[in-house]
Image 1 (cartoon, rainbow, N blue to C red):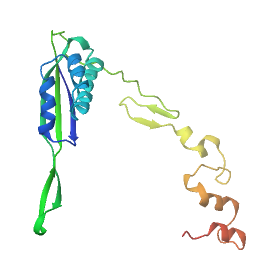
Image 2 (cartoon, one colour; image 1 turned 180 degrees about the vertical axis):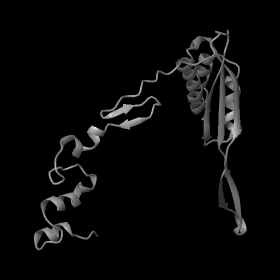
Image 3 (cartoon, rainbow, N blue to C red; image 1 turned 60 degrees about the vertical axis):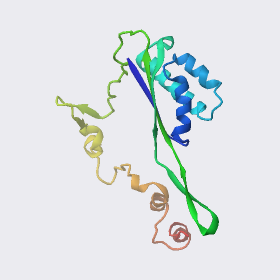
Length: 195
Protein backbone atom coordinates (compact mmCIF):
# COMPACT_ATOMS: atom_id res chain seq x y z
CA UNK A 1 0.00 0.00 0.00
CA UNK A 2 1.17 3.53 -0.78
CA UNK A 3 0.57 6.63 1.31
CA UNK A 4 1.41 10.11 0.08
CA UNK A 5 2.22 13.50 1.58
CA UNK A 6 2.86 16.80 -0.18
CA UNK A 7 4.58 20.07 0.59
CA UNK A 8 3.82 22.85 -1.85
CA UNK A 9 5.45 26.25 -2.37
CA UNK A 10 8.58 25.55 -0.32
CA UNK A 11 10.68 28.74 -0.55
CA UNK A 12 13.82 26.95 -1.64
CA UNK A 13 15.19 26.08 -5.05
CA UNK A 14 14.48 22.53 -6.31
CA UNK A 15 18.17 21.96 -6.99
CA UNK A 16 19.02 22.40 -3.30
CA UNK A 17 16.09 20.28 -2.10
CA UNK A 18 17.00 17.43 -4.48
CA UNK A 19 20.36 17.05 -2.70
CA UNK A 20 18.50 16.19 0.51
CA UNK A 21 15.93 14.03 -1.31
CA UNK A 22 18.73 11.79 -2.56
CA UNK A 23 19.74 11.04 1.06
CA UNK A 24 16.42 9.43 2.02
CA UNK A 25 15.22 7.77 -1.19
CA UNK A 26 14.68 4.02 -0.62
CA UNK A 27 15.43 4.05 3.14
CA UNK A 28 13.23 2.94 6.01
CA UNK A 29 11.05 5.74 7.38
CA UNK A 30 12.76 5.68 10.80
CA UNK A 31 16.23 5.77 9.22
CA UNK A 32 15.20 8.58 6.86
CA UNK A 33 14.03 10.73 9.77
CA UNK A 34 17.32 10.13 11.61
CA UNK A 35 19.31 10.93 8.47
CA UNK A 36 17.42 14.22 8.00
CA UNK A 37 17.86 15.12 11.66
CA UNK A 38 21.64 15.26 11.27
CA UNK A 39 21.90 16.45 7.67
CA UNK A 40 23.69 19.79 7.41
CA UNK A 41 21.36 21.28 4.80
CA UNK A 42 18.63 23.87 5.22
CA UNK A 43 16.18 21.71 3.24
CA UNK A 44 16.47 18.87 5.79
CA UNK A 45 13.99 20.41 8.26
CA UNK A 46 11.04 20.83 5.87
CA UNK A 47 11.78 17.44 4.30
CA UNK A 48 11.69 15.76 7.71
CA UNK A 49 8.28 17.36 8.34
CA UNK A 50 6.94 15.92 5.09
CA UNK A 51 8.30 12.44 5.86
CA UNK A 52 6.81 12.60 9.37
CA UNK A 53 3.48 13.70 7.88
CA UNK A 54 3.47 10.78 5.43
CA UNK A 55 4.27 8.33 8.25
CA UNK A 56 1.50 9.84 10.39
CA UNK A 57 -0.95 9.48 7.47
CA UNK A 58 -0.03 5.82 7.12
CA UNK A 59 -0.30 5.05 10.84
CA UNK A 60 -3.42 7.08 11.71
CA UNK A 61 -5.47 6.84 8.52
CA UNK A 62 -4.65 3.34 7.35
CA UNK A 63 -3.53 1.56 10.53
CA UNK A 64 -0.09 0.56 9.19
CA UNK A 65 2.92 -0.17 11.40
CA UNK A 66 5.62 2.49 11.45
CA UNK A 67 8.45 -0.08 11.50
CA UNK A 68 7.16 -1.59 8.24
CA UNK A 69 7.34 1.64 6.19
CA UNK A 70 9.99 2.90 3.77
CA UNK A 71 10.39 5.93 1.50
CA UNK A 72 9.30 4.61 -1.88
CA UNK A 73 9.40 7.76 -4.01
CA UNK A 74 10.57 11.32 -3.55
CA UNK A 75 9.98 13.87 -6.30
CA UNK A 76 10.93 17.52 -6.18
CA UNK A 77 9.18 19.68 -8.76
CA UNK A 78 9.72 23.34 -9.48
CA UNK A 79 7.02 25.73 -8.34
CA UNK A 80 6.33 29.31 -9.40
CA UNK A 81 9.21 31.77 -9.35
CA UNK A 82 9.19 35.12 -7.60
CA UNK A 83 10.83 37.51 -10.05
CA UNK A 84 12.90 40.32 -8.58
CA UNK A 85 15.45 42.75 -9.99
CA UNK A 86 18.82 44.02 -8.82
CA UNK A 87 20.73 47.06 -10.12
CA UNK A 88 24.02 46.47 -11.94
CA UNK A 89 26.63 48.62 -13.63
CA UNK A 90 25.80 51.19 -16.31
CA UNK A 91 22.18 51.50 -15.17
CA UNK A 92 21.25 47.94 -16.00
CA UNK A 93 18.79 45.79 -14.04
CA UNK A 94 19.37 42.04 -13.93
CA UNK A 95 16.72 39.53 -12.87
CA UNK A 96 16.78 37.46 -9.70
CA UNK A 97 14.67 34.29 -9.77
CA UNK A 98 13.53 33.29 -6.29
CA UNK A 99 12.51 29.72 -6.90
CA UNK A 100 9.99 27.55 -5.05
CA UNK A 101 9.60 23.78 -4.84
CA UNK A 102 6.81 21.22 -4.64
CA UNK A 103 7.79 18.12 -2.62
CA UNK A 104 5.90 14.83 -3.13
CA UNK A 105 6.74 11.84 -0.93
CA UNK A 106 5.30 8.34 -1.25
CA UNK A 107 5.65 5.89 1.63
CA UNK A 108 5.32 2.17 0.94
CA UNK A 109 5.27 -1.04 2.98
CA UNK A 110 8.25 -3.36 3.19
CA UNK A 111 6.02 -6.41 3.72
CA UNK A 112 2.50 -6.12 2.39
CA UNK A 113 -0.02 -6.13 5.24
CA UNK A 114 -3.02 -6.62 2.95
CA UNK A 115 -4.76 -3.46 4.16
CA UNK A 116 -6.32 -1.43 1.37
CA UNK A 117 -8.97 0.78 2.99
CA UNK A 118 -8.49 3.54 5.51
CA UNK A 119 -10.25 3.76 8.82
CA UNK A 120 -13.90 4.61 8.29
CA UNK A 121 -15.03 7.74 10.05
CA UNK A 122 -18.10 7.35 12.21
CA UNK A 123 -20.92 9.57 11.00
CA UNK A 124 -23.43 10.42 13.66
CA UNK A 125 -27.13 10.30 12.91
CA UNK A 126 -28.71 13.66 12.24
CA UNK A 127 -30.08 15.28 15.35
CA UNK A 128 -33.82 15.80 15.42
CA UNK A 129 -34.46 19.41 16.24
CA UNK A 130 -37.38 20.49 18.41
CA UNK A 131 -40.38 21.40 16.33
CA UNK A 132 -39.32 19.48 13.21
CA UNK A 133 -40.74 16.25 11.92
CA UNK A 134 -39.41 13.96 9.21
CA UNK A 135 -41.77 12.79 6.50
CA UNK A 136 -41.49 9.49 4.64
CA UNK A 137 -39.52 11.16 1.86
CA UNK A 138 -36.89 12.39 4.32
CA UNK A 139 -37.79 16.08 4.03
CA UNK A 140 -38.16 18.14 7.16
CA UNK A 141 -41.46 19.84 7.84
CA UNK A 142 -41.80 22.46 10.56
CA UNK A 143 -44.33 21.68 13.23
CA UNK A 144 -47.33 24.00 12.85
CA UNK A 145 -47.98 24.22 16.59
CA UNK A 146 -44.53 25.61 17.45
CA UNK A 147 -44.23 27.76 14.35
CA UNK A 148 -47.57 29.54 14.55
CA UNK A 149 -48.03 30.97 18.02
CA UNK A 150 -51.33 32.61 17.21
CA UNK A 151 -53.03 29.30 16.47
CA UNK A 152 -51.38 27.50 19.40
CA UNK A 153 -52.28 30.06 22.05
CA UNK A 154 -55.55 31.21 20.51
CA UNK A 155 -54.90 34.85 21.46
CA UNK A 156 -55.52 38.08 19.61
CA UNK A 157 -52.97 39.79 17.40
CA UNK A 158 -52.34 42.51 19.99
CA UNK A 159 -51.34 40.10 22.77
CA UNK A 160 -48.80 38.05 20.79
CA UNK A 161 -45.20 39.33 20.99
CA UNK A 162 -43.15 37.25 18.58
CA UNK A 163 -39.37 37.49 18.60
CA UNK A 164 -38.21 39.58 15.66
CA UNK A 165 -34.43 39.73 15.03
CA UNK A 166 -34.87 43.15 13.43
CA UNK A 167 -35.76 44.56 16.87
CA UNK A 168 -32.35 43.74 18.34
CA UNK A 169 -29.57 46.27 18.93
CA UNK A 170 -29.92 50.04 18.97
CA UNK A 171 -32.89 50.07 16.63
CA UNK A 172 -34.86 47.65 18.81
CA UNK A 173 -33.92 49.61 21.91
CA UNK A 174 -35.24 52.75 20.28
CA UNK A 175 -38.51 51.04 19.41
CA UNK A 176 -39.11 49.81 22.94
CA UNK A 177 -37.75 52.70 25.00
CA UNK A 178 -38.87 55.72 23.08
CA UNK A 179 -39.98 56.96 19.73
CA UNK A 180 -37.32 57.94 17.21
CA UNK A 181 -39.56 60.80 16.09
CA UNK A 182 -39.80 62.21 19.62
CA UNK A 183 -38.15 65.29 21.00
CA UNK A 184 -35.25 65.83 23.36
CA UNK A 185 -33.10 63.02 24.76
CA UNK A 186 -34.49 60.09 22.78
CA UNK A 187 -34.05 61.89 19.49
CA UNK A 188 -30.43 62.79 20.29
CA UNK A 189 -29.47 59.30 21.47
CA UNK A 190 -31.18 57.20 18.84
CA UNK A 191 -30.78 59.37 15.78
CA UNK A 192 -27.03 59.97 15.94
CA UNK A 193 -25.07 59.95 12.73
CA UNK A 194 -21.85 57.99 12.69
CA UNK A 195 -18.57 59.53 11.96
